[in-house]
Length: 515
Length: 89
Image (cartoon, rainbow over all chains, first blue to last red; front, side, top):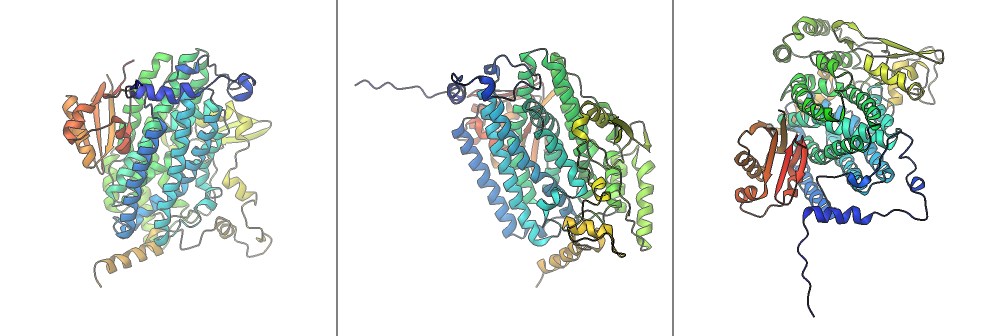
């Protein structure tokens, strides 16, 4: 018997066998009944086979490389734990970046997993379906590895213990939460532009790359391991996002205005979420790799600029708000950290005024703005604190109805003037923080009038435990809200200077260097 | 003309990959940061399987890049022999 020896298949052939050859056109059900969500957004797709995934990962190579990543990741996490890595960080102040990152981002990874599982089912082409399936698996892996990492810090530091409970309740966590809730409640193509393109391609470099490099710089191998392991998948996710955008635009010229509006919307929403990252990089890392402004110049202006120059051939314009975001780079982190310093009693992590050495660094990185606008503020706070009057703001800020960030952003050309925008819908007034958020609100008011805004909800009395009694004479609304958040006063909140985290860290460090 | 870039975790395996990139891309700018290396090249960056194999002294499948890859930019064109990033169409 003659044996027919097949040549080993190349990358492209293997990938085609996995995708094209596994798909079929249904015969006893209408295509639109199998994929009911592909039409109502107005996007026109004529030929799904034109979608190309240049990474061409097949399931066997996907499992192989992901398993290898997991082995490396857990080896580092184990080593970090066994070696008391939590004591090797530069300073326990640093841990507060992780409190913010792990409580804010890990639940988003889970939402991304759900979103891609859903969208992967809804897109009618086998190429993007397989890529979405892999991304969905990646995202749940990220959620799991971040939760594993979190459990180690939780043994030693305060503020992590109720992260899932807090994600749905605590005021600033509604910023990342609302971003994903908005995306997963959109149609499948908008979700792909929101998360696959705007978030993964344009913005994650600013979240995971310089900040995670900064975590390594501060001795935190645990965060470095989960961060870079996640970002290694992001390279594939960015590619999916970019390829989907190119695919949609190439399919039909009618798709351009719809996609442009989504790019405008999701660039701006994502940029607002990154406000938290700006202050993490400039104020919360004891040792800094680069300033927010430098990261913005490299990853947004240079890299994003190249991307939009390339997409111009389809008629895509730089997103609305881009120019303002570039102007804001000199102000964003300072304004954000000021607000967190103000509300340090109501957040389950610690805040502090920058030291003289920190301010020297900030002056050198922000020569046009720091000394002029922000140094006097921090010097004032520090002087007050020295006199025993650490300032905590006792009232609550107005929130933007779209991004849900407190309305502290200033006008693009006047850093001394807070920006307020107002819209009216069905006789009610709604406030937004910028032209970007107002434009998003005005286009879909019926969606954003439903926003669950923490401050408004607190004032309406919806953020107390069932046994709270507001009619009691000694009723303390702030204490009751914190009880509802499951935050412990004096342990999870207030200034770092007086925190048990600081005291413990210093004591443990002493033990680590002697008997 | 815009740059394309790739960033890799800094470790023993990627040392060979970085060397291969530098050998095959004369305009490469290597930027070492804590725990990572970012390499920018004007217009087009190529990673050749054969050069990486020479540097490593073993067989190398270009898809192994996924293990240590942090981020990249540009359009990707990957074959069994080359991994290319560019803004070309």
